[in-house]
Amino acid sequence: MTRAGGKASEDEPTEQSVVVQRAPFVVSANFTGRIAPGDRIDLIAPFDAVALRVPFAYGDQVEAGQVLIELDPADVDRSRAEAESAWLKAEEEAIRMENWGQGPEMRRASRAVIVAEDELNDLEVKLVETKALLDRGLVPRSEYDGLLQQLRQRQTSLTVAREEQGETARRGQGSDRRIALLQREVARSRYASAGAAAGAFVRAAEAGILVRPDKGGEKSDQGVHAGGRVSKGQLLGVIASTGGLDVVFTLDEADLNAVTPGQKAVVTGPGFSGASLNGVVTGVAGEADAAAGTGKASFSARIRLDPLSDADARNVRIGMTANIAVVAYENLSALTVPPLAVQGAAPQAWVMAQSPGETQPRRRAIGLGRVGPDGAEVLSGLKPGDRVFWTLPPQA
Image (tube, rainbow, N blue to C red; front, side, top):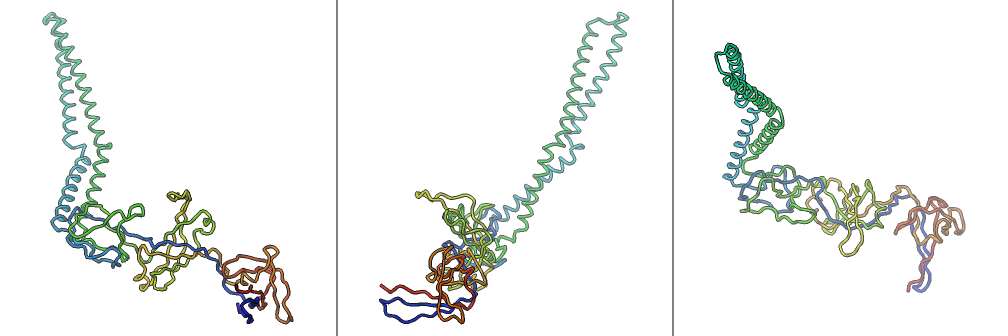
């Protein structure tokens, strides 16, 4: 827009005019947030050990492969030995379960069945011989009845032996076998991880900014320091990739309709050395967080920044304050006029305008689109080259 204005004293109205042309028109919603990790890699302690040396400070930018923590070699060797011992024990148990059919438990159960069968067969033969002698009156009835009682006992013993054999066989094919195989895989994986660790060092897997571990958004963990002991699986820090930093901010209920995923955003900040960072809104929380003591609901939102240049990566730090302008509306070829030039309100809005070739301005009805602090979008009633006039009130 080309703007012109006449001179007047401070207590007289000032006439202004502008020639409207097509130009990009953007309406933004402004918020304040902070820089936060987006793409992140958790730094995990591989062993129970004492940290002998910690050659970094939280907030430093680290490179891929950089040594971050030096652990006590004696602790590392002991942890590896324990991992190997656990793996060998699990391997032995898994092999035992895989060969269960030929194992000592199954052989013992099978022998018990064979012994019970043989004893029953011998007793049945003896019972037949005793019955023949009883029929001839050569043995007393009590001897035959005693053998019948022993026969029932042998039959019961055989039944029990066969049941125990079946139960033993099922144990080698059921959950016990599955548990043993799973424990072997877990122990093998842990041993492989222990063996793959580069000596007694913890290194950065990727380049990025190393920040303290956080829990629930609060820096409740003090991290690691030289001389301190770390536990296996402990979160020691977070490497935030400079190619995937986020900006987190909160929305009031009234702003929810103005911010949706996919919108462009421009982020600046007092610590950015004048740089403007571009990004895209990636999400708005579907559940509100009640503000403590106010009863008002707020919703968290997140912006993913475009990959930073090397210069920006050196300036932008996790936790920095960020001024956010979310592009709520954008028209790359819009006709706009200053908001003060618009008289009335939609749908009866109008301006004083003069087209090329006209001798004086005249009232022109216009169709209004979006209105921002720097301009009002005109959808109809004006064309490029028209000059719009308005009067500023006298200064107080």
